Length: 365
Image (cartoon, rainbow, N blue to C red; front, side, top):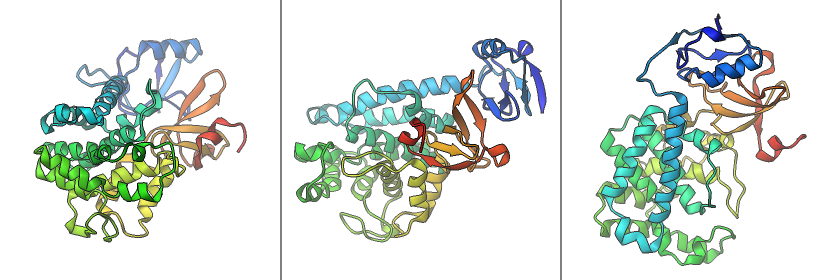
């Protein structure tokens, strides 16, 4: 591993391999610019040298990790506000047009093409000023996951846009249901559940009446269909279900499994992925499931974990070369507050198990 003097590293340098503080702690992942703030902090801590297997370079055209995250953060905040207006019943006739929504989806695609995992880091640093309804947060997150799967499957741009529009509006019919059904802070009655089963048809009818493309409308209608025929509303199987619907079915199901609801406790992201990998009832398409795992990785960004050496941390970036060993931000490191570490089999840095948020924040478990 090469050593580099902090004072001699040019501001804005990009290293081709991770930067290490020592044998364990990662300072920066590849293509994160070496900033003057980082240099000042290192010198303040009396670290005069850092290490890397890579070499520094200056590329003005490369978008830094910090810039990508800022761009994703700004879009995410604006996108949530936009979706809130779409799901307001009185706004339907004015704002619910394919061209307007496609423009927003195209902007999301531009960021996802840069690095779709950046979007999954946004919730780690972004807190909404207002409490969003489950319906809004579900639509936003499902859309980002669906588009990321679409990019992973190398869908062309026009299909990505159609997929994104369908993912965003897959439950738009819910606003046609009685208001009590859309109150997510209570358990659902049997009557409520029966009403909810009609939402794919309501969504389909609404979008066809507004001249949305047929493939978008069909995807919205079929997103609750399942490979084994156990879905609804038409009990379709396998190839009878459109590709968009299969992607949205996996995306929205994963989001629903890993989000808190009044009538169920959320699974952690790792357990949510294991549910799809097992696919015990053969509900989901294997190709789409593999794409989901490829997008989120085995230990998804945001997951709280316990390491073999007894320390706790949170996954902040994945390791595509070896999904078992993501980059984790440790909690409670003296003098540094938190530090990054590349997990591995060595020196007690392997992941033992996921932690709940309560376990992570407590002193015991």
